[in-house]
Image (cartoon, rainbow, N blue to C red):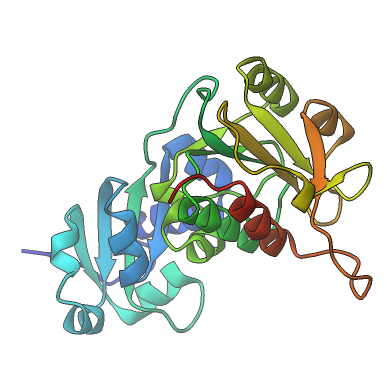
Length: 259
């Protein structure tokens, strides 16, 4: 029989809420909280389901919920409101374990995305989704990036955070230097001292890594110096720059492999 939770102060609810609000706690627990049937069904393909919380109304609308597995709990609307952090919600929440993370330097011949200081969760999520869509093999997350398993990032990535391998990297310049030593060409997305994208061949037999920084600060000089070259997207003078998520989508498409 499914256990019911009616108290907003239940320890399991407080634990799940902390996963939703604290990146450090997600890191220490190697777990995260997601909301919504479509997102949870996508994530369940690649991430272990640990706990499922749902309202009676959500179960009525989504009979697929029991198939998610894990420990399941029926919750009241006020408890769902606390988990969501807003008045309205879809009434379904899952606690997932993190997907398996790759270790060591990426192998030659692959296609990779590296991010430095991309703080906006929507941009990180959009970049993860584009990287998965265009067949990239791994995303390297350098210091200062938004958590890939935060609620806003998860919604923007539409499950790609579980589908594409993610690797947290403390020393991004050193990692890029190691990748270049393996024959992987690394391209920094930068406005200055860079080559137009249409002058750069997108096919690289030895492998390629696209490196993107934040909208406001861009990439650090140390990271740019660690790359093979810098590239930019030619745009009209009507705007100064593109949104990081949009620019990243264009760059990822250019360096895509065979789909």
